[in-house]
Length: 115
Image (cartoon, rainbow, N blue to C red; front, side, top):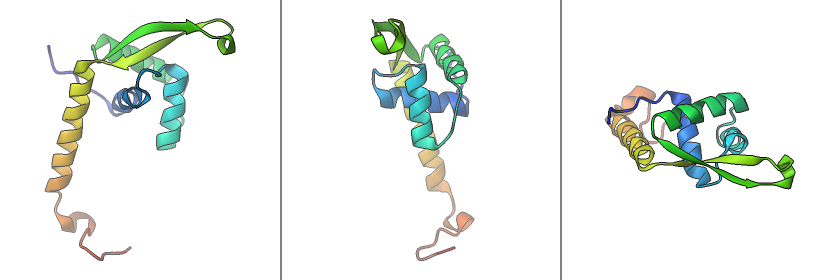
């Protein structure tokens, strides 16, 4: 399988889907993203991203049960696949490695430094 490229927003949506652990659908992902990042996103943008992730094989989806709160409509629930978990781990490891390589003087990260 060709390595998937993720944009920043796709990465956030994939990570949020993993955090929601079986409770991820368009509205819940948008609400959680706003709660965790303070970033307001449209439901349409989340849906587009979830479907891109689905096309890349990084998430699976299934239809949940109908609820009265949604007028009897069903939700499409998204879960992260093994490939999705692997790409999140790769991103995490790469970023951690790069942060570890950052010279302490780059951001004045010396102990005791205050703005």
